[in-house]
Length: 204
Image (cartoon, rainbow, N blue to C red; front, side, top):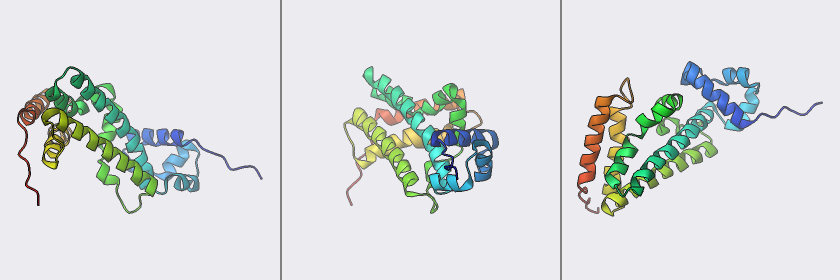
């Protein structure tokens, strides 16, 4: 009896990404993925635990690339000694990313990290998403420290409003992630956040 065929997980994830972009998230099924990758259902479940685990890993790979891109934009502004511009760079990163990697941006916008935290998610995928959340948390904290010399909950939450919530409302829900009017409003709103430190929340 011959040895079972081994499949490169990176290639399988690349096939899953292509399916996602061509057919939408609903089109990423084990049957479809097996058809394009040659991997059996058993091999896919052994590698990813569940369909949720597979989807989480595909999304996480794209999210890792985006966070590196976002951090690069922030670092450039920090190097110029302009924390306010760094906050704007972080907030407008989705639009800039869409210009350089439209397919990646489309995949990222199809879901949110919390969408994958289902009971079927395996421990490895859950840990991967946890690392992404922690990476974003460090970025938010770094921005709060650069802007106001603070890392308390109120300061980090204010930065989160500018980097996560406002872009989600103004850019990610529209038809065009790089809409000039939305970008203008976002930049002005984020500069407003940067202009004044938030009140410190009382302990308790």
